[in-house]
Image 1 (cartoon, helix red, strand yellow):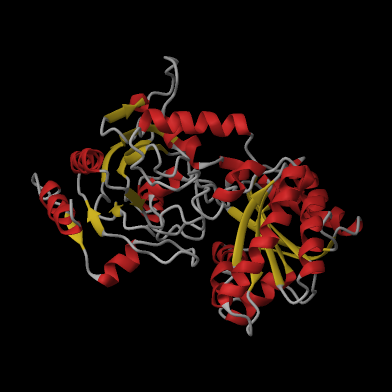
Image 2: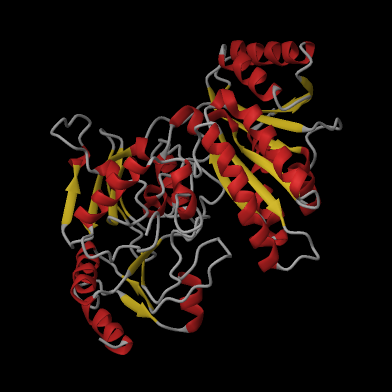
Length: 467
């Protein structure tokens, strides 16, 4: 079929039912929907399909199988591994118009959502019903639930609440063959063989498309309080974490370097937490449900100062102040974006973080002393974000080429520490060449076998995770 025939057929397919979808072919739309936050691969989609129902998605997938048309899923397009990039004439299936909250069960504390529901939309719905959806990250205002699940997104509360997959009661998916599967049916207990939910969570749309998800909610946390500490040394991140976890149930434990904070302060709108400068900072969050908890927190802070781990600190006295302190961490990506950062999202076992980070720091500094390195991340769960900023006088192409060599060194260290080359954003295209640093040949062979079962014609997000 010609490109024109494919587009005409897709328009006809999703113009069905009471809620017809639509197809976009304008160059500006192709650019917007054909990419995510990565800046490496220029988008070149054939067309953008915006279905409204699961049945329309199914019709698209069946048509794609019959005509060997490649499909790429698109959610909020906030990913950093090029998992949602259409660079080779694919048809993008965007879920922006499948954005309804369909059902709420107060007794079960579950909410059924379409895949295009925005994370913040779900959080707000939970709050309106005196409940809480705890998976949270800086892109919550634009990331979509289907994309979050397709990369098993984590974010800033993993230390207490876990990853996205921990909150999924049920899924509705369209497989790569075009079958609609209703997985687990929201049951808390269902021991009837393989739980296929967890194959689709983290699969980046390579097995099929998530069209609906039933998400679990929980009680709202009480009196969330934030403590920002200036640390004397990188190893002190672990000393402080161990000390506080003995007494308090932390809801978050983040860290960032002094360089990261300098970019945030220069960006404006945020004040330094205290006058003392420190090489690293930790941000702790906990529920201050009683005077005793606050007393314990202050005692722990004093102990950390006495041990020489902490140079200075500040604790929030109100919800507004807590939100302002969070800005020190959450505005980092925004503040460094103009410098075209090359990002790596890596993880190791929590206890090995300091040595791991120091080795990577030394390697990059030795080979590229003119590169500015910005560290931050969810250190409480072992997830680190390595950001290398492009020098002002270096061409983007030259910078990315040099960063490819940095990748090799970084991932060799990841492999030695038995870590992951992608902690949160999936494999996509940017991490695909490095999958073997985390996964064995046998594992990859099984992954490819699973892909063949669900997507025998290879039309679902081809070229992502592996070839």
